[in-house]
Length: 235
Image (tube, rainbow, N blue to C red; front, top):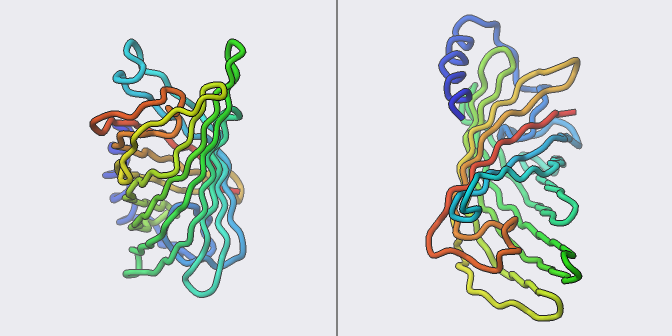
């Protein structure tokens, strides 16, 4: 996060001295701007650090493969499709976006992602299963620098509902808040190699329930901080 913040002043300098390149044709996956073509794809990973309130002794980073796709719809609308895959537990989200330019360099989008997570773990002969739904209404604002560097700032609410977990054949009932928290992201996208681009981002989640901790069968009486690091290659 410190490195990311350190880079921001440098990007403003690049804006002043580099040749301007139009946004059309630039590869992007998070930057809020209407799409020109049918599909855009990114592959990478997300690493989430669990807080000490959960791990008690040491911080643990939980990695997950990140597959991200955009599909152009009519006009300024497109669909955002995303998969976070760990094997034993996974999350799929799907939602519409409406994006529009605000000025020559700034643009914004609003959207709403519906997510379904599910997991299954077999330890010591005990099968633990869980699944649930989440909702992420979101707002993104983007700024386009020269040198094809794109900066996106995003805020989203985390809504949690439909959680069902079982330990063996015994259902586990817990109370979960519908509005469980919020998340805030800072994301950079820029050309990387050949015709590809790279994504580097940081997402700060403040929530009393994070789907990757479903095996604990509990929620917390306050929001905890879950930092996420995002790395992706836009194909």
